[in-house]
Structure formats: structure tokens, C-alpha cells
Length: 103
Picture 1 (cartoon, rainbow, N blue to C red):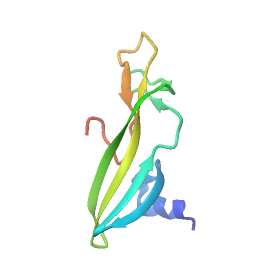
Picture 2 (picture 1 turned 90 degrees about the vertical axis):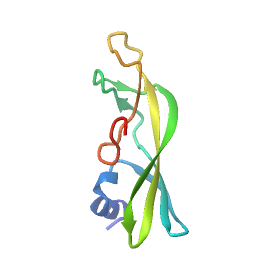
Picture 3 (picture 1 turned 180 degrees about the vertical axis):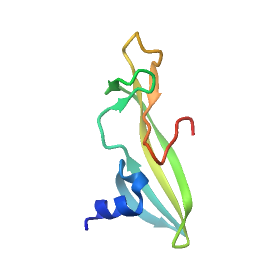
Picture 4 (picture 1 turned 90 degrees about the horizontal axis):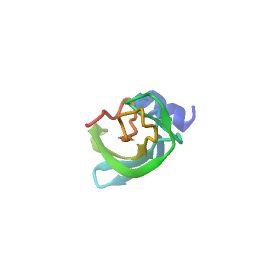
């Protein structure tokens, strides 16, 4: 079984992100992750956008694994919509599972 397959079994909610690295920091397990795709779907109109307006980092924390705190720094992008029909002018991409809108 490959590492991505193993992660998909152990952490199914992270199956849609690309893990960039995992390291120990004291008693914590830290990792960096990002979304793999070039685009995101607008929650207002459902259309895909590739126009990146900015970037942000979300800090996801979970209960301990093997007695260690788990922290994931998830890089997300903010997209713009160029369609005048859509009420959303910008939106942040969401990763179904580990993130929720406005969370």
C-alpha cells in the first residue's frame, strides 16, 4: 500500500488535499497541505474559477494521535468571479471534510 493510499484509509477527510510535509515539533505532529486542483467552484453560482485573487492559511487542529497533538496548516486560495450574473465576487475554496465555510 502506498503512503497516499494509507493516508486515505487512516485520514479519509484529507484525501482531497496534497500533504507537503510532516514533522515533529515537541509533542506535536505538524504538517503542511494544500489543495491539488487549479480551480474551485463558486458557492454562489456553481461555476468554476481559475482566477486566484489571494492566498490564506487555515490552521486545522485535532485530537491527539499516539499522545501527540495534530496540527495541519492548510493553504487555501481566494478566487474572483468575473461573471456579472453571480452575486459572489470573491470566494475562498473549501475542502469538503476538514473545513467548513466561515469556520
